[in-house]
Length: 152
View 1 (cartoon, one colour):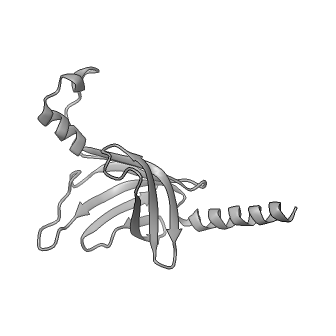
View 2 (cartoon, rainbow, N blue to C red):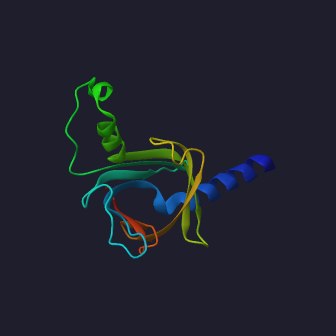
């Protein structure tokens, strides 16, 4: 019985630690700004995407460029040129895994299980974040930012 109570306490602690981010977040802004250069918008100035943090500690992220690329036929990607395939890959990114929050450091850590480009596969991605009501800012705000609003 003591072991069960201890396990329940750990589960409650873990779920409480995730609580501030739990939900679906719509992407509003996504930019990078390398030192001494203007801001870069790899998915356009009005990207589309969602970040989902669930109560079990899982994260799912999908980001796509807007305006969208031309639609392909069902077999179109098999017939696309190398340049067209690279353009398609550059226009979309996604990954999933689990997440933990280090409240003392103000970071969320995405423990990536797999991603669409195999860039983050098996890595831990530390992301500084700030939460103000229904707005979530991920990034340092100087060299990169992902700004999201909570979906209600």
